Image 1: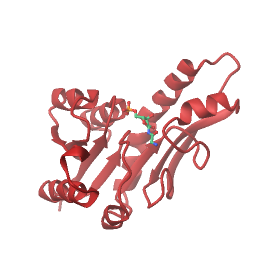
Image 2: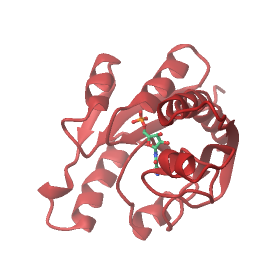
Image 3: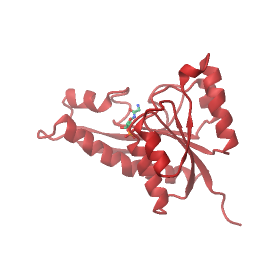
Image 4: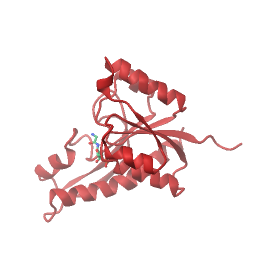
Length: 193
Ligand code: GAR
């Protein structure tokens, strides 16, 4: 019997370079999942255009359009049920998921973060590492739990900060590591589902 193809949803709010890296890995046959849907909370985000041009359907869910967070998340969960989603990859999704959501998809939600967690949590991890003058930072892919930028680590990779680095050059190095590490981490996880 053929193994079941895992249905993946990517959640993103912004630029979408990790979305594109995942979509590319799938297209190249390096990642055996079906990218069913992009869930995005920002209609104007660049990731929406990327999804459309990659032929991936987009679910737009603006928090402002719902009376409460439970209503917002219930609408998203209904879509995940409709598309039979097995696995969720947060890729720059700048919204905290509730404990109810996390519990429902325990060990099925991955997040990528641009630091070696637990160092430099939060929305400005690359700048925070650069400003703090550490010599090494990196990228983490982890399972999501109830805390922000926290949960069992799946993969981490170091990135050295050289004296010659600028914030821009460091950002570039981090993102290029992210684009390889995220598909690798998803591959590891689907091997165990
Ligand atoms: C990535 O660098 C990701 O690690 C970060 O948002 C960026 C999204 O970039 N996530 C976090 O900081 C989570 N705390 P992208 O939209 O180009 O994929």
